[in-house]
Image 1: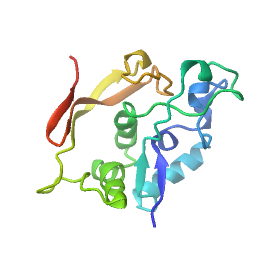
Image 2 (image 1 turned 120 degrees about the vertical axis):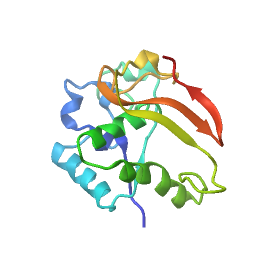
Image 3 (image 1 turned 180 degrees about the vertical axis):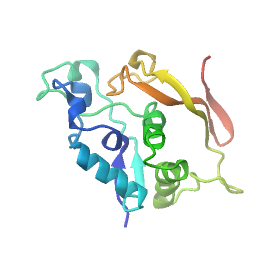
Image 4 (image 1 turned 60 degrees about the vertical axis):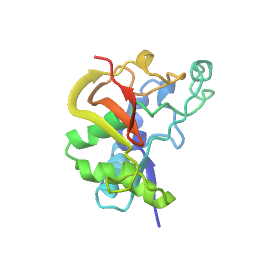
Amino acid sequence: MTAGTSIHHLTLNEFDVGDYRTFFKLTPPLRSEQDRLAIVAAVADGSIDIISSFHTPADEESKRLPFEEAAPGAVALETFLPAAMRLYHAGHLTLPALFRAMALAPALRLGLPQGRLTPGAPADLVLFDPDAPFLMDRFKLRSKSKNTPFDGARMEGKVLATYVAGTQVFHAED
């Protein structure tokens, strides 16, 4: 058996929606802080074994509608790691627990060789500075969609480079 949750539901709660800010409209909706902490505890004890990005971009016009009419979803590929680092920096999860839930468990569940550093496994790697602070600016995201609930948030965990099968496919601009 496996269970998963999104990085948004691990790091945000119903109060983040504020005055019905549509970048925070997700499916399922964000819940209480008590519920969020219960999900974090379930990841920590292994009851929930997978953390996913739930990358569900929406075009600008569909998010600029009244809250009830706005499309649910948010971009998450570029915010996935820094959002997860919030859990590490708050002392909720260790780095090994995070990476097991973000990479190893999903790969095992799907029967893929990724998600681990072993001989013969693809060298799919992320080089990052876990303590590098930055301000999330949605306009600097590479995604065509810019709807992120983390816009303007102070974050830590800057990605410096990524590798797919040992080939560098991204290098951060200084």
